[in-house]
Length: 94
Image (cartoon, rainbow, N blue to C red):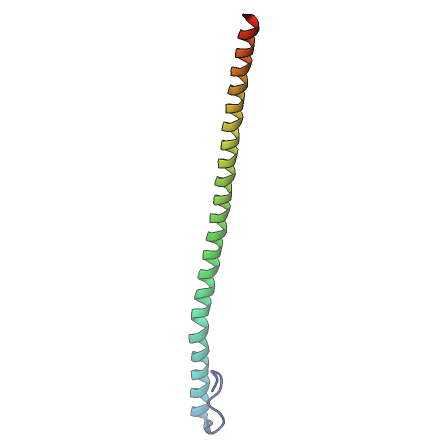
């Protein structure tokens, strides 16, 4: 038996009240099924957008961290080069 039928055909509405009540029951059954699906679908869309924003934020933080570590390593390299140049200059001076 499906949601939009009265049965397998064994029993069927025979008067106006039966037609009206079966039509009403089928409509209510469809609404009862459709309403939770719409709510779940809406919540899925909201959660999906949240995840996209979270992934963007993580990617941005990762990029900033990589840039920061690259700047630190460049700064350290410059310090080492300055120390080496100073030692060389002091050795040449002596």
